[in-house]
Length: 363
Image (cartoon, rainbow, N blue to C red; front, side, top):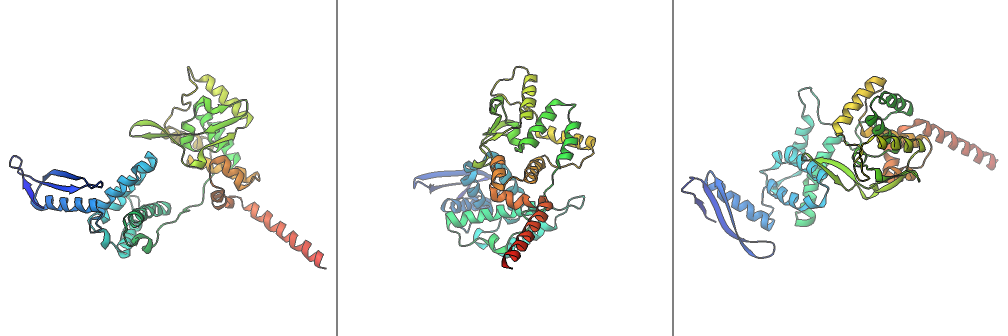
């Protein structure tokens, strides 16, 4: 495995042949190394990647992992994964050999993340810590499942953080009514939040809506796409999950409001987006409206929680709610059922009545 010095630049380069995945012999060259050692080390790592030799460095396998998954997930999902990998995982593990990383290494990495504090003394949230760990584990699982790494040290070390984190925040219908009234001075903001609250859709789904998605005669709304801002470009993608594609009923009053709103949009076409604002604009409007209404500031996604909690309070089943919001019913049961303690009291009262009835029957 020779390396060569470029007489013009004084730098080293690697030049060699290898067999690609199709068993075809190819030539590979890379220039610009400061030393011969660097050039040879790069060649060794490249060949380990090509042959998936787990004596390779962690960062080398990450390149394989990224190449494998990039076309299999939504672009926004991939960018999130890539950001976590590059900023929170690779800096710690990058020069460690894949087959030499142990559960002890993972625990040390976890401890470093759990001890982190920013300039305000705030650490990462439990949910974010769990997300970061899950991504590391996903990399090792990929190596185990597809490239025969013996085991996943991240799984052996155990997780960190918490899936649920803090209790779900939401507005009561009275709080939303106050907020909604404060929004009436800006029609675009008012109608956007009306759709979010009364339909329970995601923010990306809202920003992708077009006039043709509404069927005002039948009172329905079709959800079949999502809006993302990626690389300074507007991108329309598939919804978050297969379950997310759905047609939902819309209250009559909301149909009338949206018809009024669409009439305000000059020259709008059936396939044009009707809410052409940024997510940051709506975040700013949330700040403004919450302050003006005197209600607690919640996240925009928590308006979806508010819709779901409202439906729970109205007595609808987890299955019915899941169909409306594009969730799995088990997620609704697990995440939201605790939002209304009065339901638990009602359950206990009914169970106690059942017990009394059984005692009467026995006597």
